[in-house]
Length: 502
Image (cartoon, rainbow, N blue to C red):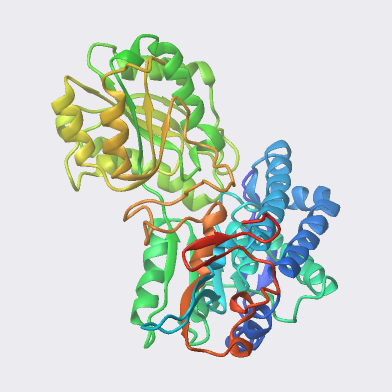
């Protein structure tokens, strides 16, 4: 039987080997999830909140051991991983609160009239969700990350695929989750884990799988997307894949460019550049010697990028060479360390005219590498931005003046190309909140209307059903007249919130 092995990025030594899940076990996990789906859908959001709180509590109880194992498999460091585990526990609780609040169910009731029947519209859980977590956030976007937490909150069972880069941690997290869910009263098969590439492929193709949620590379996401679309019954696929995230410095914003350059370096080297929100392209008004200033800031920072996997480290070096072949000039390179899976950090420059659709210069480099380009005027800047792919986030650096004449049109232009626009803030770091949107136009994601972070993440795992002239007793609990789950509902066009008097 084949096995999946994780390795220690500090020195390349093996850490954990786990046998890949046999085909019949994968099918059994999906079948069990199908059976559990009706039970989860019938469980109140308040109960699901209790389940997620139990998982969060158990993570915190075992935090030290989990962080130690995660560091062995990712080399992300104890401080970073400790903060990430705390964040993951908070996420689990947050999605439980979103479920209990209930507005994600979108309950809408139109009473019957002389000409129209009674209609009740309710968002219903879709069923088993296949979750593929990311390498770069083993807790926050791992097997118990945003996708799993929001799917469980929405009332869907989850079958997650262990990430090969941290397979030992994936298995341990799955054990803790199963233990917590069962002790909190969740049905069996609420959560399961499979291991191995073939198991993941089978999971996506399995008839009982209702939705796929993926966070990772474009190559990986597209491979699963093709499987989804070759199924007899095509299902939704929510893939967050990431692309180059642009930073635009306005003429007013360039007045203190050395400070801007330091902020940019801090952002694109954070986590060795292994963030999907890493800014990869900076556009600066001509005349600031921008690439040299950013290069000086990089040398001052002295990063020593250590990559999550040997493949990622190799990809950074390969992509650097491809960027130079495509017309970029390497302004400065900071070599990686000599031990483990290290990679260089670099600043490159290119003429703005080289930013053309299809150019390698517009492709993401998943590492501490950034391209700096100067533009002469608004026309050149607009042309460059028009050439970019859809992205997760775009940043505008202004002079801090509300009257910056370029801020308004840049915010409007970027809002058509990205899922989040930030002004004066660096894009790395994604808050898990009610207003957050972590997505973007193709090819950043497969569905620009979906978010993998924030309250709206639950929307991916429900679908609306309208019940026409259906007896009250036959409706799902959210739509019944007595409102047993005490949910906010829109009745005959008016929002009614239990206990608020409205």
